[in-house]
Image 1 (cartoon, helix red, strand yellow):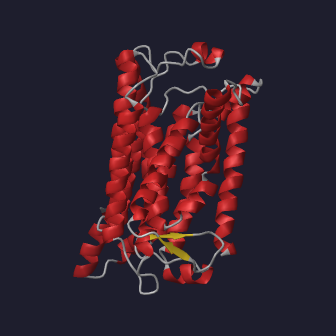
Image 2 (cartoon, helix red, strand yellow; image 1 turned 180 degrees about the vertical axis):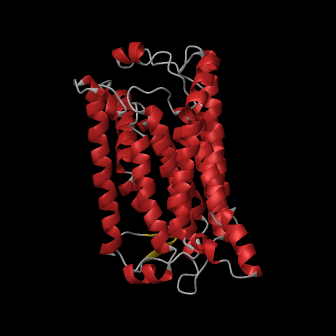
Length: 369
């Protein structure tokens, strides 16, 4: 909104005191600060309100970690509403609202937030960990993702050097190679978004475990969006230039700010859980940003922690169905380490360290191209 006001006032005359608004870095920083402020200001009242409304709070798995049943019982969920409020307000205030990429990533984030809220509501009201049918949820997730990718294919910016960029897959390290998938990219892009959403959802099992890795990935992709959206930087690093996608950096800044604000209340011991409302929305946001910036494969590296969590669940399920044996003491893998005797804080902090290492590895591929 502020950027639109700046363009309107600049068209009518010189406005030197508003010139900061034309800088993407300034607006990204302000989106971060705004989102954080919104979440912190609404936090205490929202948590008290949720405690009054939910009563017993989020249901805890009966077959899960024993101490969680005692320590986490009664903690309210749906804290993702706080994250979404900060994220959306921060983005709307500081991003260029004429930019198609901003609206696509906001659409995916908000839609997945609504899906997650519906799932959380079902769990709380039924006091069951089942929630909405996984089949129904997946169908709705794919419908949203397919719509978002279709818009990017049809209305995303094109360049003379890469006219088929919107339907192509770029690879890390290789400089100019693009694999044009045609309309098959519609399915591929949707898989990236849905996969990212559910991967973050699997990771959200301990206080602060998902929040910080999401912020780390958002920081990495904020930088990627800034670089690939700038012709000079993209040309220097031999990245595929995506006109206009730099504005997504503002959105990534808002993710970081909302995450920092939420971590104030979600740090161990958590006063509130983000629930599926937050995890699905944030995961979907990262997937949508990766598709918009044409760095889908890099997401698998930067968000490698989420990939590991998802793989642990898949391996556990397949192994148990085929052999009747479990590879891990409990899946997702963060619970496996708890079963080994690691404290919750040890698991969380060590996983944060892994997330930082993987994000740096993903960013290193930009220079290797």
